[in-house]
Amino acid sequence: MLDWTRAQAAAMKPDPHAQAIQGVIRDLIGTRDGTTYVFEKVSGSSIRYDLGSRQPLVGRNAPDLRLGDGTRLGDLMRDGRGVALDFSLDRCLHGSAMGWESRMRYAAGPARNDLGLGAVLVRPDGIVAWAGDRAPDREAFERAAGHWFGSPAS
Image 1 (tube, helix red, strand yellow):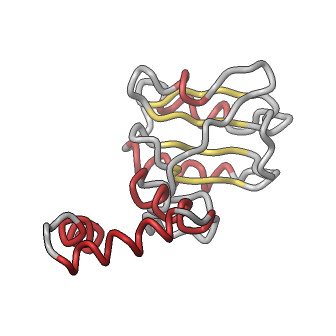
Image 2 (cartoon, one colour):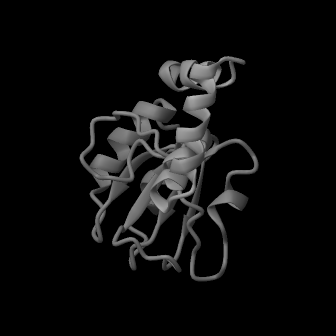
């Protein structure tokens, strides 16, 4: 991030070097890859925090996932709590998630935009904290929820 900020500052100086940098940037932005790169840097969508998981979605901003009934993740996050989305057919995380109901919302149903996941835990800041495969591991979910949301209520 610091290098990106320094590069922007260098490109804005009123000297011949900055003008050359501006020309290169204009050329890059004129390409699909260049535009994608700049968008990802400016929007922060290229950031991935290392949260100790190999699952590609973990540590990234959550996409606006939708349940089959049209419920959007963005709508579920409006109250500032985390969200547990359970896409499994048997709603296997329901009982576990209720231990954190004061700190996270639980929503279940089939995913409209199926990413091959069975469940996703999203922190209040919109970062995916955990993602489970088609048959989510309840114990792994509970460990992640405990890590990010504290001990479950008794």
